[in-house]
Image 1: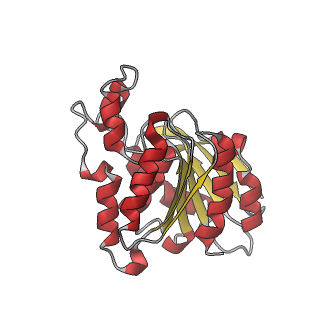
Image 2: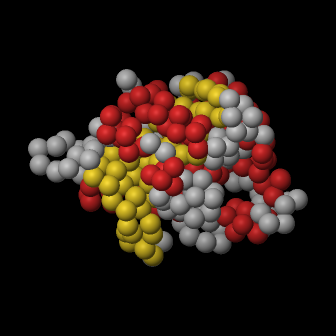
Image 3: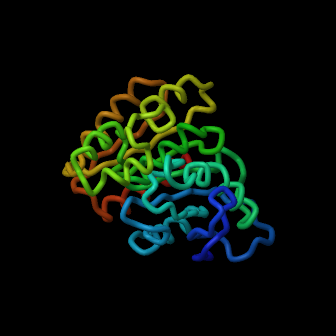
Length: 256
């Protein structure tokens, strides 16, 4: 196993940006391209958070899986109204770049995306908007109802400028940012192109109504012809739950 921590150049954003990568092999010789999990951080974390706070290195080694952990600041994995094109970077540029740099499989069925909190939203958005790239997503304590978050931001002075920079001054919800609308579109695809979903949340995660958002999105997906596994665990918005979630998600992603 090998671990890379450093920076890469994004042409989309015209800047260097942080990246952490776990590779399941020590040498490229005679090794097939690796199946890959793009693992996304939350609002208050960075590219190294999963390496620092979870056992993802052990899980990657056990399942012979590459893990790519990008840096997106507090962008909500979105092409910001007043900022950088983080969604285009994560969903388009980054997979192509990493496939070339690290010998990763380009196949849709070998490419997965997951994340915690803000990263759970980003993972769902990547897979639902780009099911040609990602075959399955995992959301752990995800901020899944952006309309609810936007409404709350109107009454939170510390969050309002950030949300306006990401989503626009009027905070009008656009279809490309609405997971409920994106799920409807993904459900209309041929069965073999519909992304699968694994969603977890802590039953005590009431900050920003996270558990309420997750149950609402669960009910929405359950009414659509999309494969969904949903689990709730005791606990709140915390690393032990996210570590448990990614450990349980990987076999689901791999079909084990």
